[in-house]
Amino acid sequence: MVGQAAADRLGELDREQAAWRNRVDDFKRERTAILADGG
Image 1 (cartoon, rainbow, N blue to C red):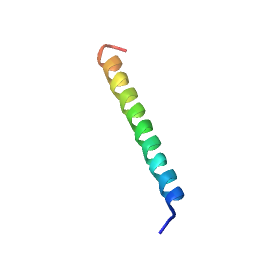
Image 2: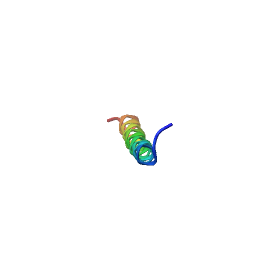
Image 3: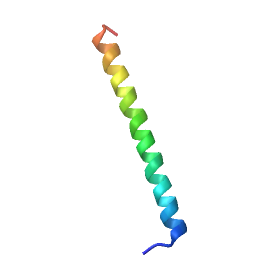
Image 4: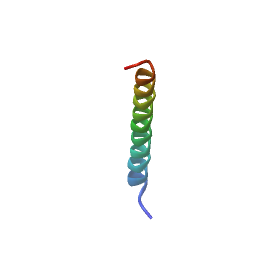
C-alpha cells in the first residue's frame, strides 16, 4: 500500500502519461494525413 500523497502523485503521473499519448496520437494522425496528401 502507498500513502495518499503517493497515490495522488501516481494519479497525476497517469494523467500526464495519458496527455502525452494523446499528443503522440495527434501527431501520428497529422503525419498520416500529410503523407496521404503527397507529403
